Amino acid sequence: MRKLIVTEFISIDGVVGDPHLWHFPYWSDEMGAYKLNEVFAHDALVLGRTTYEGFAEAWPNYEDEAGFADRMNSMPKYVVSTTLTEPAWNNTTVISANVEESLQELKAQDGQDLMIAGSVTLINSLLDTGLIDELRLMIHPVVVGDRLRLWHDRATPANFVMSGVEQLPNGVMVVTYVPAIAASDGADHPFLGQSPTT
Image (cartoon, rainbow, N blue to C red; front, side, top):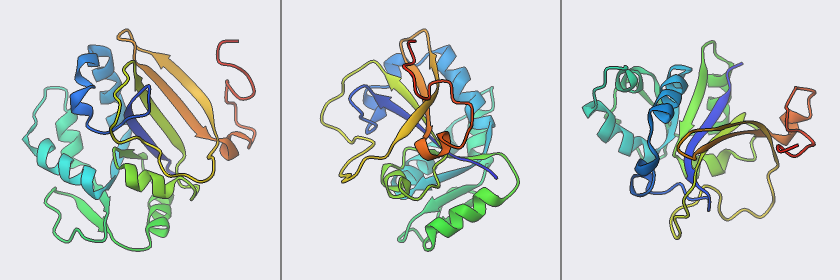
């Protein structure tokens, strides 16, 4: 079973919107290596329409020696949208109905894990479905203010357990969370039931 993994650039006040305005001062070789390893550890993207259209406009124009752009452009893309009818980016499949069933079928296929980046509306819609297996948040040491936040308009809590943390030299923390239900299945999660500083 493949995992569905959310990966986000996020500020310490929870902002994910407009990362081009606050993320780039924290870019580093270490972050680049992390993101390169991450994209090669997945073999398909799952995206909402807004993020998809931004990626589809940008990535086909990029080139890099490490092969990051080639990987992004060549891997299958699954965009969840009821309005997109003519996707421009190669290897794109539109999921316009039965989203949960379609993603469950993708997870059941052989291969590497599936990655969601950006796509805040999609992620919020999936939060209570049990389909998200991991949140990977690159927390930037900046307060951004009044921009789009990752979680919004929730009536009930959704509980997660920290399963890993890594500090990059630029002050960015990569914090990984798994759903609390998954953490209670007996898996070895080092921060379950304790402070990460103990």
